[in-house]
View 1 (cartoon, rainbow, N blue to C red):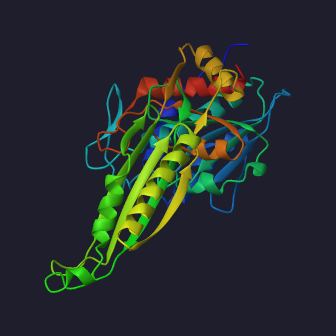
View 2 (view 1 turned 180 degrees about the vertical axis):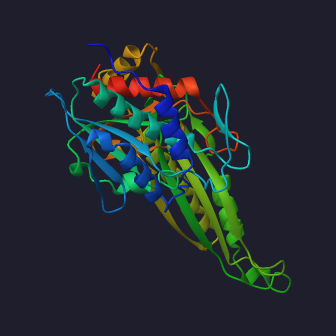
View 3 (view 1 turned 90 degrees about the horizontal axis):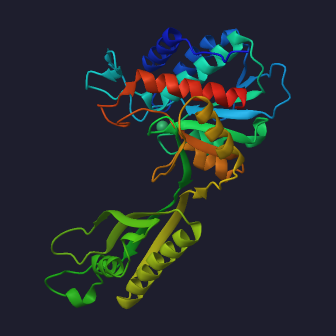
Length: 366
Ligand SMILES: [Zn+2]
């Protein structure tokens, strides 16, 4: 049997229809309406989970293959209200007044076209769980709340890396966020500074004793913001910092946070002030080994689509972080869009087609 072929015309129509929907976090229902209608011919069984993710069960055809999950997120990093599409021979962009939203609607469109092309071809395929998440770009809201028990698949593919089609993310960093409040004691800075304790001095000493920037090849740390103080003539009673660290190793990440917390405790003690802080784990690091089932299948699908797999390490987060943290075996794959999160965002036609061809091969279980 010949392989199912994507319809170039229908693929572009689907992509443009999705782009025209303004779907910042909170407005994903608009995408749900378009998606469920587009996929009607495939008899996908749709439901919404408690947080609002759209989950579609697409039954197998003459196959006893294990189920897989295909994922893309329905939200965009900003609103695209007033979107003016510019479609030329090379691809799709905007007039420069808004982002495009190919992150991640290129992934959504590729999944839709892959399902329609395979369904229309009559080719045998295993069951596919389609998971369209909400709120990825505001902090993985949908995937963090996702219950893996709600689907059958334990192996998944996230079509959301902002790099060429054929790339597979084999390692991604964990992230910790730190917020610290330093407390000193206010006093008149001109009359009796001896009576005060400067929270700014405590914070400064703590920061000076923290290793920051690039810690090692896979670990970085950054103080992102500082605020504090009340007036020029008041010894500052209060200061706050917000920091972030990332590492490909959870152990090194924990060690880095411990050093930062120790520096804050030491500084508070040194000046006889105090510090309250909270360390929030944002995402967990993951690495996929050579024999990882999702990686093996992703690379086979890329080859079957006529491309060469390219393994990459990323500094960014995606829903794959959350699926992996929940025990699903998930790989994030290059989706081909360029300049994501910028008004110059662009999706080349040939990348959209390649992404769809790779997705078809994922479905066929190449
Ligand atoms: Zn994205």
